[in-house]
Amino acid sequence: MLRLAVASLVGTAIEFYDFFVYGTAAALVLGPLFFPTFSPLAGTLAAFGTFGVGFVARPLGSALFGHIGDRHGRRPVLVVSLLLTGASTVAVGCVPTYDSIGVTAPLLLLVLRFLQGLGLGGEWGGAVLLTSEHAPAERRALWSSFPQVGPAVGFVLANGVMLALSATLSDAQFAQWGWRVPFWVAGVLAVAGLWLRSSLAESPQFLEIEDHARVPLADVVRHHWRLVLLTAGALAVGYAVFYAVTTWALAYGTERLGVSRTVMLTCIMAAVVVKGALTPLMALLGDRYGRRPLCLAGCTAIVLWMFPMVALLATAEPLLMFLGFLGALIAFIAMFAVIAAYLPELYEPRVRCTGAAVGYNLGGVLGGALTPIVATALAEHGGRVPWGVGAYLTGIALLSLGCFALLPETRPAPVVAVEHVAG
Image (cartoon, rainbow, N blue to C red; front, side, top):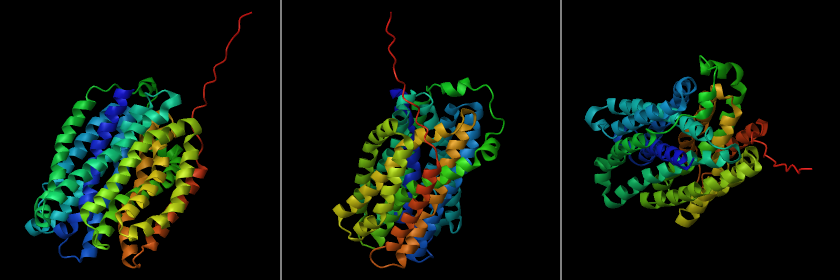
């Protein structure tokens, strides 16, 4: 289990590195380079628009790779999705800017970002199912949380590279070629991930399925549509909070508050590191007390914390910003640490790869694709403290809280040992 869990963590970290490095670049440099005819605000919004395309592609990737996972196995999904995401990320680093090829440049960004999202939409379902379906029932949340640590590792890797380049290069060098380096690094990481995943065994639960769904997506839409909508609505707040912290706040802090890139990246990365370290602990609580109670608690904490978070961000003080981000991400991981066990348990094995992944990634469309765009627009029309962003995030949290309240608990009943006394 440890070897399998680590392989899932590393692979997920690599794929999320690919996805996150684009978000950081969108917040820092893509607007002026690919949309130079726009105003600074419009350029940032346009860059976040290409960022959002990746989220739109993720449910499509879930349907495509979910079909493969439910028909042919979870293992092939991990290999193909990693290849697709890695290749498209390296290609982003090679796209000429608007000054070189005109409007073709942002169009190429859109296509490659779409392919990134397509690959990532398949990655999560394959990695989570391969781990959760091997895990013992009483520790399923713990072992399934390893792939959930992957996004934190990928984010720190992506932003660590960006931070190192930002700190060592001049603004002109960073804009000219420095921002491309993290995208090229993705190629090396993809090769390492493929080598690590080449020897993984297929899921035992998949091998036990005798009646495979002919068209898994059709079965999910026909028999589980309500569950898909509820899980998408429930997970929307997690995406909204995470990308508000890691993408929108980065742009807001550097552009509106005048905080340096280095300081903003350091504050955000430090909070993400703590979030990643706490993931297994939250998962253990999910194994002991149930998946649904942790999700409800995390969602409630987000409702209470969004206004304090934006107020702390507006101070532009590094320690206070870090505390604001940390509180939001701890509430976030209380939910997402157990989701990797929770979602697969909600679906029958024959359509599990499709159902769990589609619900998970639809939540990304609702919460992740729009949040940087909406938050940027709301903050532009507010005062120094972006209360409108706090209200927007609180509203999404209330929606998700209602969806979680309608979902059932799935934690397996604990096995009680019974002693038989002879005589």
